[in-house]
Each structure stands twice: as C-alpha cells, then as structure tokens.
Image (cartoon, rainbow, N blue to C red; front, side):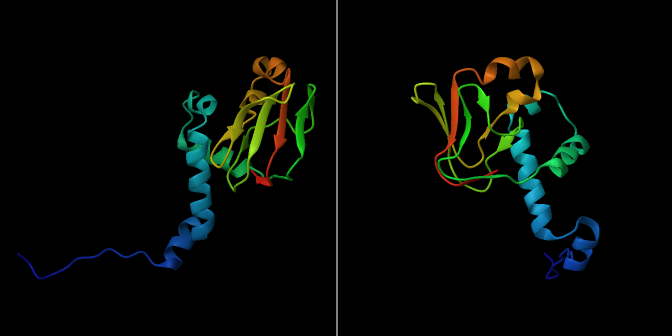
Amino acid sequence: VSDVVVTLALSKENFEARLGSFKETLDKAVLKNILHAVPTLNSLGLNDKEMDSLVEEIEHVTFKRGQILLSNDQIKLSPALYLIHFGGKIQISDEKRNSVYILRDRDHFGDEFLSDSLAENWASGKVIEAVEDTSC
C-alpha cells in the first residue's frame, strides 16, 4: 500500500486550446447525443465526424406560444429536423385539433423532411402548434 496519490490534471487553458470553451463543447456534446437518439439519423450509421458536421449546421429557432407551424397542409416553417432542446412544448394534432402527440425537451419532429419520399405525405392532415414558447 502506497501513501502516494497520483492525479491527472487538465487545465482550462489546455482544454480550451484543444476544444474551445467548455460550455460550447458541452452544448455540442448534448446536441450530438440528441441527434444519435433520432431513429432516422441513427439508422444511417453516421460516424463521429459526420455527426459533428451536422451539429455545426444546427441553427437555434424559437417558436412563440400559439404559433402554428403547420396547418391544412400549409407548412409555415422551414422543412427541417427540429430538436426541442431548450424547453417548451409542441403539439401535433389531427386536422380536427385532437391532440396526437405532445413533444417536450429532447423530443424532435420533422425528420421526415430529410427524405423526399417521406415528406410528401407526412404533413397531410396535421396541425403543429407551439403550446408554450419553445426553443429548438
């Protein structure tokens, strides 16, 4: 039994020199984990470099409470994959406004827009509305 304790240390300066700010690195890691959880993307078997590339392309979007994102097959948002990451709530309903899904933090919608064949019929008869201020 030794009385010597060996530790490893990584300074903030060295961390930031290699990876940038801790907060930005952490945010990117969280987004990457969320992307891995999207079945459509996960099924592609993307490698880390490809996932990192997608994370770099993500833009933050905010929807206001009551904002209609899709109604009567009229898409009122950019066709994209949306990852609810910073809180809020999105409701996906049928055209009679019967709630079908409530999406919250770490949920996603719109991955069908990534595939032309899926996007054609995906919006049919759906209403998508922000029921709380929501950030993606």
